[in-house]
Image (cartoon, rainbow, N blue to C red):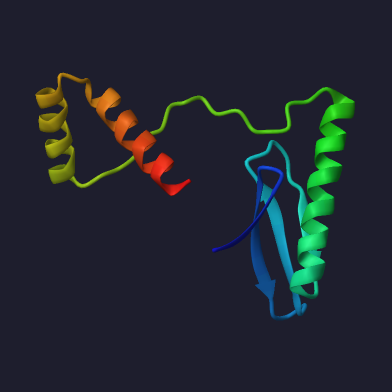
Amino acid sequence: MNTLSYKGYLGTVNFSEKDACFYGKIEGIDGLVNFEGESVQELTESFHEAVDDYVSYCLEEGLEPHKSYSGQLKIRINPETHSRIVTLAKQTGESVNAFISRALDMRVAAML
C-alpha cells in the first residue's frame, strides 16, 4: 500500500480509476479524515492540509490527536514458531510476553 507521511501522521493512498483521482485517509487517529487529489502534488497538498486542519481541530477541542492503544495485541502465528518462542523465552529467562515484546521492539527500531 502506498503511504504519505507528514508531521508524524501517516496517510494511506488509493487510486479510483472510475473517478480518475487519488484518495486516502489519515491513519492512527480517532475519527475519519479523508483527502484527495487528481495528481500526486494535489494529493500531497490535500494530505498536508487535512493533517493541519485535524491537528488544529484537536487543539481547539482539547482532544488527543493520536489514537491511543491498549498495548495488548492478539496475534496468530504458526504453532511451530510458537513452540520455538516458548523454548527461547525459557532459555533467556523471560516470559513469552517479554520475549515477544523485546523482539518486536528490536524489529521496529531496525525499521526506523
